[in-house]
Length: 133
Length: 66
Image (cartoon, rainbow over all chains, first blue to last red; front, side, top):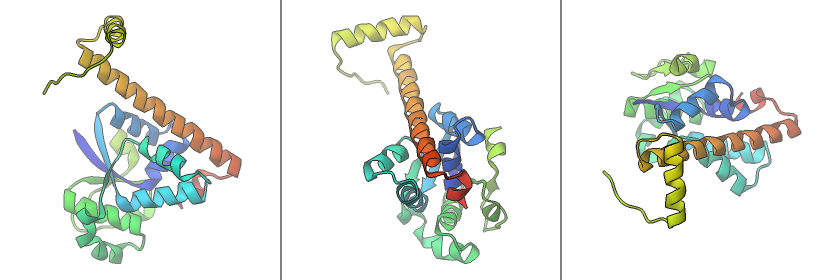
């Protein structure tokens, strides 16, 4: 089964519009056709935005996040590479995905043009459309 | 690896009926389908709540991901 790392923008896109390519990707994950992962940094970023920008209570935030078919990778797994990735891109969430992708060999799916333009070690960055097929 | 779970007789009977209705190969198959449907429904509820809150706040997707 194909495994991918997903950026926060993919997950927010799915939550915003389920009939989008991002929504289709999440449905594929629930059906077991692909396996989705993301990082603890992305997890924290999403929790903060859902709480601060949308005003969800803590329990509601947890409910939304836990409904996503995503396994979250702890910082310990990619911490050793994070500082180097941060020299390449100044966003912690994006850098965490680069480090995690480098260390695990997974592709990153993102809609972020800035991130898509980064060349970091052996990391492969993929546009959403290509992953959904 | 198969293992056993304990359920009430009534639950087992309902699962058996579902298995026949859905022409599932086994109870395991029908339970997998139910889990998938439950997870999809839960995700859709999250989406509805998320979208409702975005609309109430007058926010667009770009406001969150930029």
